[in-house]
Image (cartoon, rainbow, N blue to C red; front, top):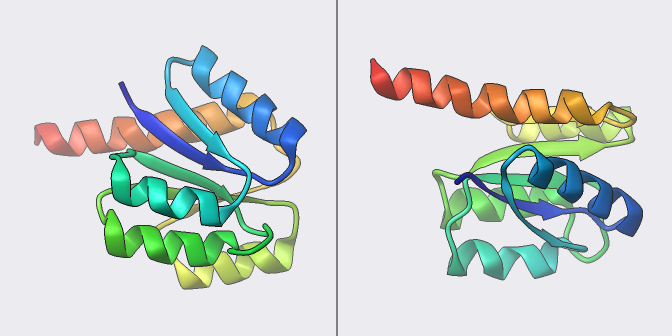
Length: 125
């Protein structure tokens, strides 16, 4: 089962995203800040880090950089409501997908499915 670490500081959004991903068959561990997510990346394997960019204590870009150091095989996907921040995230981690809020849950699930279907297809070559 694909494991996702979700870091989102807004509780309603975090619960909404986690529920949608779980209904789609993913295992989701959710936290409300990057400083809570960072040690989890060191302790356990996650296939995807899904992180808001603007969070207290440690922003999503800093968290993604930490993830690249301690768990380089973990994919990264950013979510944000700020277009300027999305641009900065894309420049900092060009391989990461950036979803801008608001987005439909089906779009999020489709992006996650594309990410892992692409990996499965390339692994079979």
